[in-house]
Image 1 (spheres, helix red, strand yellow):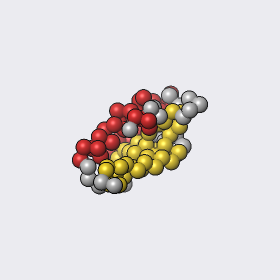
Image 2 (tube, one colour):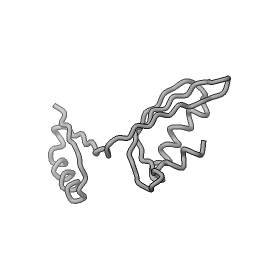
Image 3 (cartoon, rainbow, N blue to C red):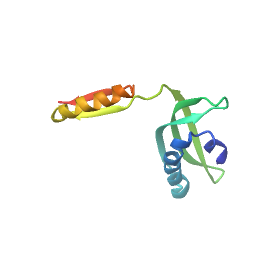
Image 4 (cartoon, rainbow, N blue to C red):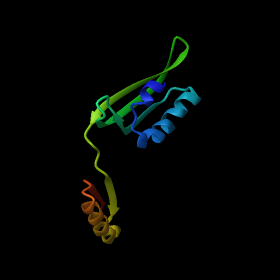
Length: 107
């Protein structure tokens, strides 16, 4: 199991472990989907979307992982129309740090 853990970015390792531990402990069929960063052999950091599914093969628990490289995700901010005053503050903060974002407004 450790061979692929080494590829996970240290900042995402805790989250990935939390996603994987139930698969190993519960030993029941389930699927998981999440996004995380990995560090490739060259040292470059890439974002991937991970799909994992556990199953039994020859009476042993196995986990099938599929990783698909994705563009760096943009933070998603969801605000209702009651939060328009907060929207201006959040937008200023995101602009200062040059963070891309999308805003969904509840109608």
